[in-house]
Length: 244
Ligand SMILES: [Mn+2]
Image (spheres, rainbow, N blue to C red):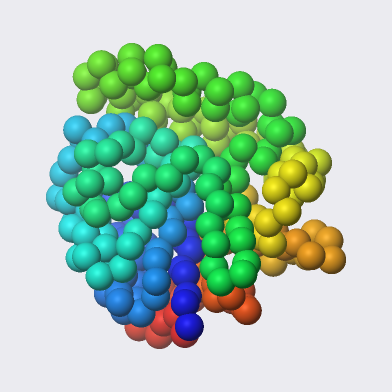
């Protein structure tokens, strides 16, 4: 039967080789076992441009390429890696998708996204998001030397960590009214996203579910979707790491 895999929020970085290792093992074991892999954003902890390549990024792109030679890989940008571009995607054999995309599996349909756009109550973040996703902002930022971009990314990460501590959990979670609006307007069976790091399958109403894929901070989180079933598993970073 057709099966699709979904992951999000791996936040890969050279500082956390254990997560990278778990991801590479995951790719190795799941290759050619499913019909597609969807990466729903924040694959990387930071991404300052496709011109910033090194042993770490080459290892990751090479491993995704080996996987995508057998199984298609689709990527939706997260709030950490929205500067990831066609050049890296091509190298990894991934297809970039728009920030909101509808997929079909058998008779079922799902809207997929990173999920940061659902957090409407985080007003400061939404303002930054609007600016930073504009073509002119991306264009000008990529003209800056890598060292300057790196400094900006570091200071943005520190600022956002500090402001997150001051914000309530409700503000940083999805706004239910936005979930309702999207589900009402579309009539899909599922809304699938990451970003909030709160893995769960929510029954929003009689017919529609919201599925949140978890992060990879202390364990892996993988959603396997077939026409009849949605299975969300959390898997430890060790040899037992296997999706059924
Ligand atoms: Mn995110």
